Length: 105
Image (cartoon, rainbow, N blue to C red):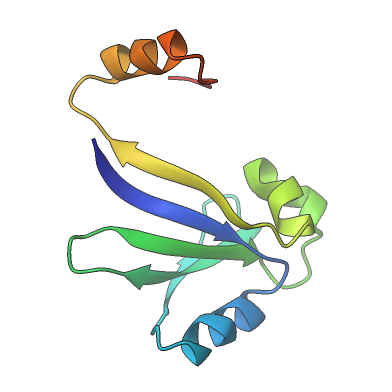
């Protein structure tokens, strides 16, 4: 298993970026997601993993943030993570067998 990225949700991207800058990180704007309702900045690390700082695009209600709606509306902070594994089915079965909830694949 390799960590790909952690999603960090907030109601205002500029505020979130400023908070990360204030502790020494340098987020880079990553753009608008395909839905047009959310956008992101990235804090990348030498191993290729990254923090995805995400929020709604200006003028978008958090309820329209798709998968992230509840997370953004609550200024949730860490809201999800993505990993890379060699065998997705085997990894999902291992998690299910351990009693962990699995949504997908």
